[in-house]
Image (cartoon, rainbow, N blue to C red; front, side, top):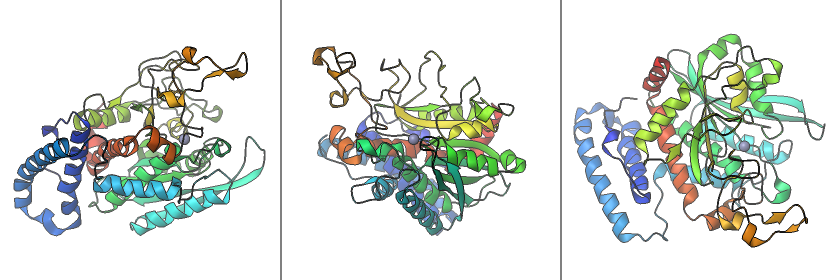
Length: 414
Ligand SMILES: [Zn+2]
């Protein structure tokens, strides 16, 4: 998609600025996608002026007239994403999507119908597997949507849609309905773009929580030529809800890769490109590269999510994740403890097997795989956090896929 707008002109630094900024991007580009306006050179002349004026008005208006407690209206892309999130994990939505349950299939059906509604080529890749915990024979499915480029090459955007820890009350809102919702919004946007050199392959993975089964299945089913045509894989897993936002690369030490590491790629070029976009387009320090921790060098992540089989196949990966690496948690600064919010402190003393002394609390808590991973709990604990973080993730992904040819070219220069 052509875009002559200089998005580097604005460096928003606060909550309202972030929201205004997102509004601005969407408002300034949506008419271009969806109408004949792109053929009018005048549009490109007046747009930078309109953008400046709209941004200034939005900031002044929201800062002066909306108190911090009041919810701002969501920009269109975030509103759409929030709708998909509600459909998947809201109180009235599908809810628990445990691998092997009928509700996992229901989520797959919903994603498939939504992708098809955008006019993308959609494939349902069904597979059987043995659940590694229960040893039961189960089946699941990946839902794959494709927007071709002229070159036959594409970048993958993936997110798993199954959930876990339902016995603790989790509805899998941040792990991982929010990521699927973001992927669906980006798919809709991409479906409206003109064809570029590079295409996009969207994959909603099934059965991630029981051993990355869908992701391994996808890579196994791909031919060598298919693998060569995937220029990168962006994995979204747990991208909102926690205190901070990160973008990781694969680990510099190969993952286990089902005992075949011969094709493994560490290649951080995709992470670097995504981080560059984040630095250019979001407020300073919104997205971070996590500091080094024993076993997890700076910016690198483990093989515990759907990016792993792709790194094993030699594809550069970028992994978005919301957590808090500043917390010295249960097993160190490893990102497994996600928030300092006092309501999440577990206050549990393993020695007495009872409640701990509140004074000695470690002051951190967990969201994924707990009863806190639900929209009702999170919206109460962190008012406004989820839509705001959805919006920030959308800013980065939206830019990457709108200008995919440019970003892939810059990645490959590295
Ligand atoms: Zn997950």
